[in-house]
Image 1 (cartoon, one colour):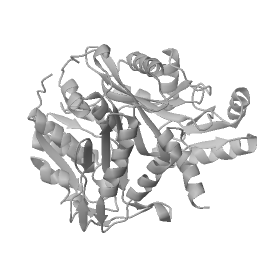
Image 2 (cartoon, rainbow, N blue to C red):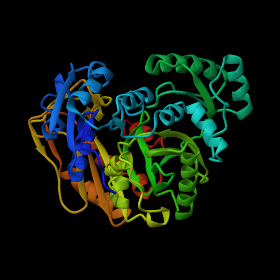
Image 3 (tube, one colour):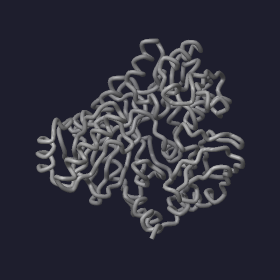
Length: 453
């Protein structure tokens, strides 16, 4: 596959902007970085061929300021925009504006983003396509009367979820009618404030499931393939901390079933480019559609390490009109990979963010070790943005070797000037339940409760 873009603007910051720049370099494509005033000295600005300031530090005035970003793309004569993850990556209106200006949006079509971004509509589409879904309401809940009727029908406990957005906001679990009504009001209020849309829907609550996602690629010619699963159950407040592939809970047969279901769902919306279908996996091995992310994921490197593919380069090539030159039978996993998200935060003080200047930095290297980050010695971790500043990704011939290599690499990391969560990751990897692969989405909550005793 050959990319035809001459220049790509990266509408993002931090490690994902650096990741996209590196992929573009390998493809011989010029890059344009955008940056806020706070990010003037950031690594992505230093690495790009061109850089344009798009506003002051707050994201709403810079990385989410569409007119300034489009103006930067037009001014720099960029052929395409890569949105990375977060920010504008799942904004259908941004994808449409790019098209209006003759700029290729490296991602799915605006209609696909809009459809799959509405979780209740997405669930209906998946159910119609034959993808297993969690029993629940047919769409957004109209009022409290309908809410009570649905909860009574599917049985308690239930979970109330925002139709738009994610990250755990607008989400409440209810074990009885009193909690249901209170949770409904709180979820609507939170969803409205966070996403500008207070619609919610209701599903049966699956106790301590695993969070397993399937990586997809689709081209303009109707070809869609999957690259197995990523295990994402180690999370705190619905934010992932550690991901691995393959999942210790997924057999070859189950992987085939989940992959086929994910591809079936993607084909139902004629999906284009990279995307991920997320499933809940219960203790009996039943899986249910949760949501679709219409973008590259933070944890994409573990799939790259296991399947030997550069997903970002594939995104760019597909957007340029290339056809996938392999089929599902060609895609075979190799060994095991684990990713730890390294955040500027204090796990011993409620995970309070810890921005500041990195005065000393040593990152491990060696066989099977990858470091995706935007930091360097002497750089500033800004208080304006997400606390994640790096991802340590480890490959091993099997899961045991990957865990041991990760422990060794974490022990070698030296970061001074800020507080971080490296030692917290070490403690999780030492836990016998993690090493045995016996965990669900409530693992971190239980781990924290036990360590406080």
